[in-house]
Amino acid sequence: MEPLVFAILAARTPPEIQLELVDERLSPVPYDAPTDLVAITVETYNARHSYQIATRFRKRGVPVVMGGYHPTFLPDEARQFADAVVAGDAEDVWPQVVDDARHGVLQPVYRGGFPSLEGPRPDRSIFRGLRYAPVPLVQYGRGCRYACEFCSIRAFYGSNLRQRPVSEVVAEIEALARRHIFLVDDNIFVDVPRAEELFRALIPLKIRWSCQVSIDVAADDGLLRLLQSSGCTTAVIGFESLDAANLRQMRKAWNLRDLDYATAVRKFQDHGIMIYGSFVFGYDHDTVDSFDRCLEFAIRSKFYLANFNPLTPMPGAALHDRLLREGRLLHDRWWLDPDYRYGQATFRPRGMTPDELTEGCFRVRRQFNHFASIARRAWDPRANARDPYRFLLHVASNLVSRREIMRKQGKPLGDPTPLEPADVTALPALTEEATG
Image (cartoon, rainbow, N blue to C red; front, side, top):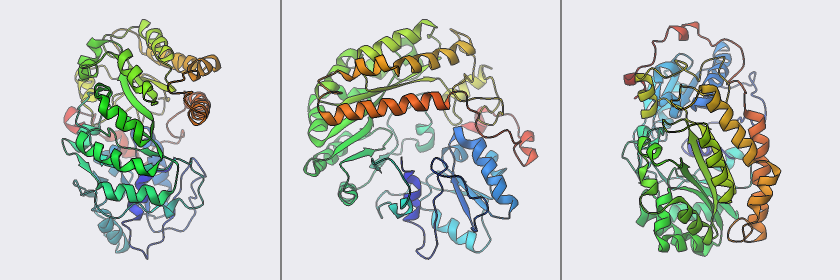
């Protein structure tokens, strides 16, 4: 899908600056292309590879600036491989970064604050000629009102919650002229009254849309009716665990505060909303039996998609700091370790071995995406088979998910080339203070 961040930054770039977007999912990086500045958005999973890309450009004398969640939490690490790091939201400081680059005076670190989201809509001309999925991404707000232990959103935004003016969001969607959009907010319901205002404004557009929601909205029948009437078709919901003790440990006991899971699922599906369920394994009350219980629940509930993730300590999240204190991490920096592979456990769980965590997650991913499971889950007249569009969406999404699961499992994060500069090995061991 489109990397929305670059359209946001393109809208804030002086018009005389020539921009080119390179997306490795679509084409190789042109390392020999003439350019004056390279900007890379870095997530933890692609940090090692991003550093390798940056190193090749810097050897040519091309300056590199990095931003995103990972450099925000670990700016000293990112600075080993970049000429400049943007920590936090980049909109307000991006024009200064560009101007400093023009004059050869890039600063080591630029700190973005919490800029207003009001202003120019994303400049999607930067996507022209690139083949992305026909579901554009639209952002309404940022931040989340909850603070789950494993999530870095709260660490990034704190309690700051912001939304764009509804009129600007509606105008952007109308200009897109697409029948299905994805509202990418981490939780579209951080401010329920304002979310309701947006949904009412979407009704006349007669579009379909997807989002990420917290399960507690299922307790509000009026809100569910509004979701349905405004076109909500699919929702990503973090169930995380079937065990109440795990939910308490991850600071998400509110998942079961109003309704049990089965009732909440039924209410979403009764309103035609297809559910993408997300689960994590490895909390202290999980055992090897937890995998099959969760898989059976996901198939019985007829989720159109589901993800079964090994609990992963991300820098900046409270989980990382706790596991660090408890001495349970398997790597100092798993995201830089050349021996780490995608899907592997990164710490020692209490109720199983690291290998059992790795193998259990991969096994239930495969079984959930088996053709028999896809067919069984498709037959749900309330949601997945409510109409031909939903049915085709279910089939297409599952085929893509099945392919990606097999493609990504066990892949290294980057190539075997040693990271440069060599003094990254001299970085001090991570501490709670360094990551929090």
